[in-house]
Image (cartoon, rainbow, N blue to C red; front, top):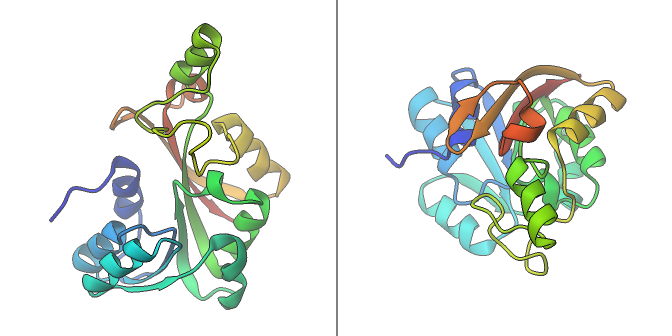
Length: 196
C-alpha cells in the first residue's frame, strides 16, 4: 500500500470506521482506497481531472467526474458523515460557499490547504519580490490552479464569520506535525475538522 500524503494521513486517522465519506477533489483516490481498505469506509469521490477519475475507478473506487464549484448541489443534505476537501479550497471560486456545501452534505468536514503565510512564502516575496515556488506550491503564478491565497488566520476568520465549529486542527511543517504556536508563520500546511 502506498503511503498517504501527510495531510491525508491525518484525515484518515481521524475518520470513524464504517463512515460514509465524500472526498471532493479526490485526485487518484489514494485516501478513499486507504479508508476503504483500513476502515471499511463507504467512500465516494468527486474529481475534475479525467485521468484521475480513470485511475480511481481502476482501483474499484466510486468516483465521478465533476467540479466542486458547480456540482455539490446535486448531493442531498446530510448524506455523508464526512465531506473532505484536501488541497482544493484555494482552487475554488467561492470558498465560503464551498464550506457551506460541505457542511450541508456532510455532518462534519475536513479541509486542508497550503498556508500562504508560511515564512518561506513571505521571505520569497520580501527578498525576491516574486510569487514563490515551493514544495507545496510548485507552479509558477501564471500556471497555478490556486486562485485564493488563503492563510491559517484567514481560514480561522472565515470559520468564525460563518458560525462554524472547529473540532480539530493540525499543522504540518515539511511532512511532520508542528504545534499551534505561531502556526500562521511556521506551518506549511493546515488541516481543519469542522461542523455546524
